[in-house]
Length: 191
Image (cartoon, rainbow, N blue to C red; front, side, top):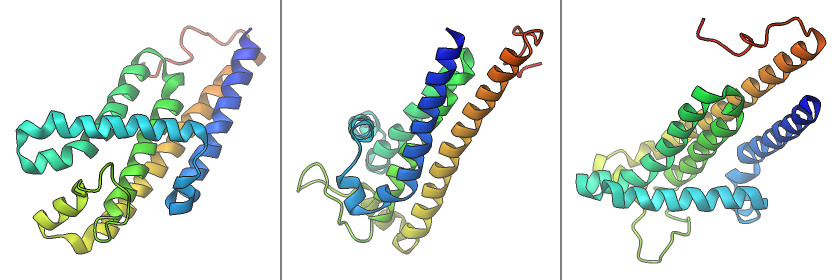
């Protein structure tokens, strides 16, 4: 049973590698975002609902936080999820960190669109959050640089998650090869 779980985990890790590559390349284009793999479309829809909920949650903190709140909650929920899951099982980190990175990459596209407003929003009368934020702060000319930094950060978070997953696989294989290796301490990084 342990071998089957490890094989499934490796297969899921391979899927994360594939989706991370997609997010770093095709997702960056309009055509790529319009032809998402089903799983990424589902993740994007979940992220959209969280984003919209962020506007409601932060509405009471003023206009600036109302506009920022969508992206803020969209990024905070996956981060909190990653922390909660990591405390109980760090083998889940590749998947939760992928979700964090996915949201950073998704947000970077929205941030980079601020000067152009070409993205289709949920309604024709909706205000482009980042266009409003950058106009309010007077830094519209920095939109593309900020978007590139957020995008790079998202890709690095995804890759970090994959590396943690590979470390998990290596430690599991080490435990299979050397059964004397103490299973009580092999994932305890606190000591």
